[in-house]
Image 1 (cartoon, rainbow, N blue to C red):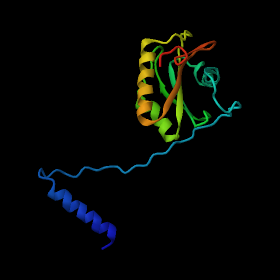
Image 2 (cartoon, rainbow, N blue to C red):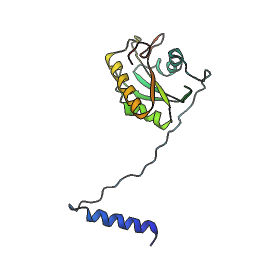
Image 3 (tube, rainbow, N blue to C red):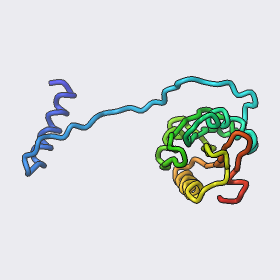
Image 4 (cartoon, helix red, strand yellow):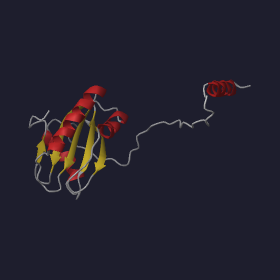
Length: 169
């Protein structure tokens, strides 16, 4: 018998011995993860060194939208953008964002840090209580997994607010 078949047979024997309820076996998928590049853009500035730089980059992805969009910019150790992910598209005035969805792209992109941003279709960049709470959760999640959240920007067509500059984290 081949080595694989012996191993498989031993696994089944162990499973049958350890299954007092005589239930059918549960199928478990074996998976691999990969990041899929949908397109790319050229970024002449090469690195983000200020909230203004981040605003100019994020503006392309956010100002035309009639609904809230939450974007994650993944950065390398030199603050150079390596990937941009539209993490969530919400409604007219809300976007439900969970840290696992934000950090998923960062982890798969091998990001050292991230800058996140979202738009306010109302064109008022004043951060809501929810914006501040989400930012705090993202910063904490980032600390745990080792990916720093550098800033969170609320982006509108003519102006923006940096939650880091405002002292929210």
